[in-house]
Image 1 (cartoon, rainbow, N blue to C red):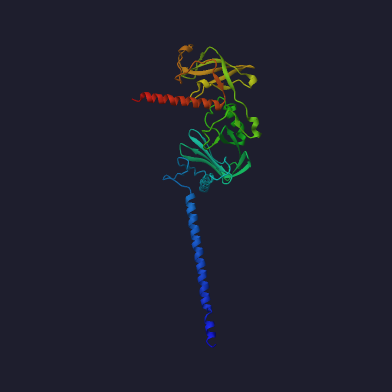
Image 2 (cartoon, one colour):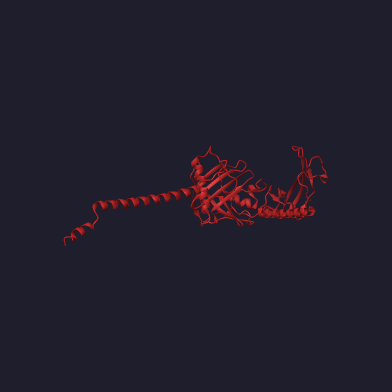
Length: 372
């Protein structure tokens, strides 16, 4: 019995031992926390480095779609440029998982410039104007996206001084998707059917934001717009030449190189179809790659109309059209009864594609014949 008490007492840890164990546990816990924090920090740094904007050796931003771009840093701050780049990439990364198949990249391409828009309901929008000659972003905007309805969205800018809100409407031309500002839906409808300000004008290229990848999709004769804009949809004009008059020459006193060869024609539609004076109707039968010959309406009756076809000839042929040599076209076939006319962009584009295929086939034949 005397020995049991000391043995029992010695089996209990001393206060010093307990303190040491407590410190050891605390040290282990702190060490574990530091280790976890380091892992998180390293992972975050790795993610940030992957998401951070990338630049080429000239300091141009690598945008992922083509030639790298400079930014107009005299008008926009470093933060605005950085936010633009980050949002641009975030929208791109979201594309495979977004539920809105209208979201994504849109573009308008001109001869020396382009407009690029990216948007998604989750990540917002980026709107860039780019000089393709200077490889530079000249204007930028970015912000949030609000889905107003199944057919419209609203861009809310985060940049002071920009238009705060802009509403865009989802419209279609056949199987091509477009994003059109609400105030321009009527223009879009006129563009498709070749009327309004797009009739007999210089608007021959892209005008509205088309979804990336849709450019080669089939088009249609009429646009598809939400019901509240249906009043802007009208049919294109289709006509045929029924009579050809005697050509005559008008001397152009302001030109040293060419005069105008005028051919009067009669066509088979008039005011009962809605046709008006000065309307231009492209001729499908003489559609060229770079231009389209047109009948310009000069007088409108109820069931028919009169018009003229203008061709440019070399200077100095007096009043004899038979001796005329055309200034710009190698071949200008004589104007004929039965030629088809239309303002439909779908039809004129279709004809241009057909002619291009014929041209390609002819070139292949030439190359084959020239090959020894």
